[in-house]
Each structure stands twice: as structure tokens, then as C-alpha cells.
Length: 147
Image (cartoon, rainbow, N blue to C red; front, side, top):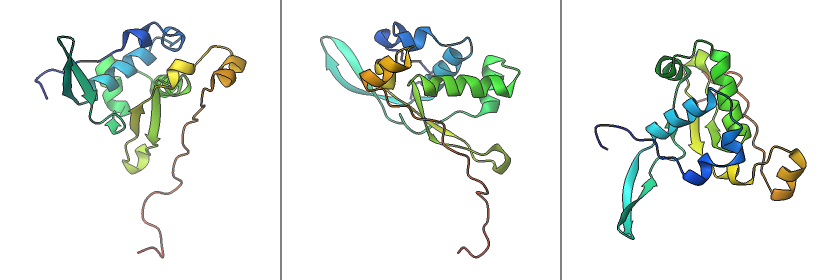
């Protein structure tokens, strides 16, 4: 990986209704996730390099990192931004973390944004799959009686 990190944003995604309807903090979180993606050169097409993501669904970005990097003061703002990205199909929450138990959340990129529409009836008609935030594990630590 190079000494600097790039954010790979698709022009069609930037022009989509889903991305344009994001609040002020959600694009910052999305760009931060993009900067954590590792890419490798796939092939050369029409004189341009083609890239593919290696860890598309293994992205770890803690609330503390987000708050420090983007100077967001409130943890609830970070939660709302992540929920908004998930609700509009830009990311998937692969594994829900639990900060009390020092378990980080894992995120992944999604193409569900292509079928997102501001009106719920159109989303269903387009085949948009709604993926709610996974539930937090109740007690992920040691459990009595388990090996």
C-alpha cells in the first residue's frame, strides 16, 4: 500500500439520490471508510489502471477514530451518520461491536445505494433490500458452562 491513502469514490455514486440526501457527517464517515480500504491493481483497461478492493467487507473504523479524524464531538452524531449510510445502502454493518467489551464494529461497502429512492414505495418496487443495524451481543464475554 502506498504511503498515502486515497478515497475511491465512483462518480455515479456521488450523483445518486442516496449520496445527495446524506446529512453533513455521513459523507465524512464514508470517506474515512474509503481511506481504510486496501486496493490492488487489477488490470489495465483503455490505458487506465483498474483497481479492486481487497478488504471491502473487513473495514474497522472506531468511533474514537471518527471523532478524532473529523472533529465530531458527539458519539450520537457518529451513530446517526453510520445508521444513515447503512439505511441508504452505501455500507453494510458486517459485525456489530460492543465498546464496553472492546469489540470493534466491522463495516463493508455495498451497492444497495443504486436501488435506493427517497420514497419507500419506490424502494420496494426497485428491489432495495433494507438491512437494519445488527443487534448488539448481550454479553459477549465469558459465559459460564462454555468451553
